Image 1 (cartoon, one colour):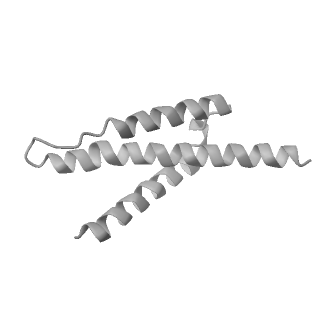
Image 2: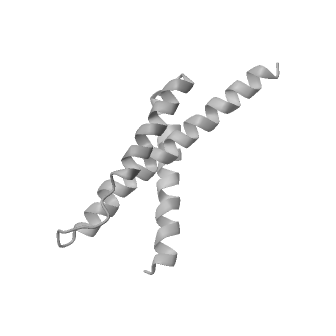
Length: 95
């Protein structure tokens, strides 16, 4: 599988996992904007902690599915929470 196919499929899979988590476990979503922003900062830190190189043989799979995938799912989950919070705020402001 080439990178041109793998990367979009991988990112789409992470987004779908985040959507599934949000739909399956809605109680995980923070109630306040401050908490969502804190989660956003933590997601940004998680992405920054991804190592650039792997030193273990076969470590690329551990890196991709053990570190990068959870970090991307977290980023997408925070984005879903932010969009949902913005929708609630806009709908209550228009009334």
